[in-house]
Length: 435
Ligand SMILES: [Zn+2]
Image (cartoon, rainbow, N blue to C red; front, side, top):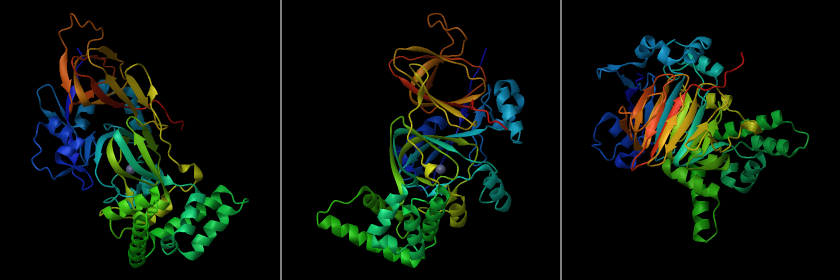
């Protein structure tokens, strides 16, 4: 008889998280750990499901004893799945670890301007600064909007950036004049190639990030005055100006507010997703999301944060090419109840399983172990290979906040009653890299 294992998962109380009862993360954590939220002002930012040392989940064995992932995989090679073991071997990873890290985020306030290094840079940063960059691994991410997601991501088309610089004196004052001239000349020259365009964008961006605190402070004041006076006069302000004011209110005196004029402003509707490749500049602004990433916690930050910033590394690592833009995508529908989020890298694949009420549904077996989160609702499930709801007495109830480690090749049969259920399942991806 197959068996699934309950997981006890941790929350991260970063300052940008939604607070107390407002936070979906707090709700999931409270249900998952059977603990009350006592302080309604406490931020609950992230709910972590996985084995990363910065917030490892515990697995409950049959005697309700807590065991670590590493130990579980060591004892349950068959239930882990061959491909996960092969994956770790091919990457020279420790044998008993998960390739992915799975999270829920409840965002109240903008997260830092950030990017995640590729594998080569991650190895270098980890070697030189192991206390800051704890993982030698890359960290491509997938964000799926649960309610909705507002974010800034990737650079705007260069002509739009140029128009903004020409239009607003406060931008001209925070960017070196030579850099701005070169930028304008190169992007308006029909003979310029992509490489030259990337170079001048980097020049302008680094000039903004390296501008002195004093000048930034003064120019943010100028920006505020100019926008406020427009509002007073009844002149309509642009989305960029609105965003700049919002970022400036959240993080006064931070040059990050000016990025509203340089980066794309995205709104994801419920169920839409975005894949964030390595070296892409981004910041989430608000919303609740499912997030999945390669197993790493490496973040290079350069603004809109009280945390450690590493502007030099960020400027050097970013992708400035026109192809860097992340597109909002929809998942692939697998059948009536399952949709699939499939990145171009192999570390993970995410399924959303939504079963309406009063329905029997059999979820296909994954070839390797997976993690299943019940995000909303409840259902009875059984693990038998053949389903016969009239005779099968092995159904048991799962509900919001439950997280399970599902062994390889386990079939899950959902039987919903008066309530529907929405689950997310993560397992190793099927896009094997050609080496
Ligand atoms: Zn990120």
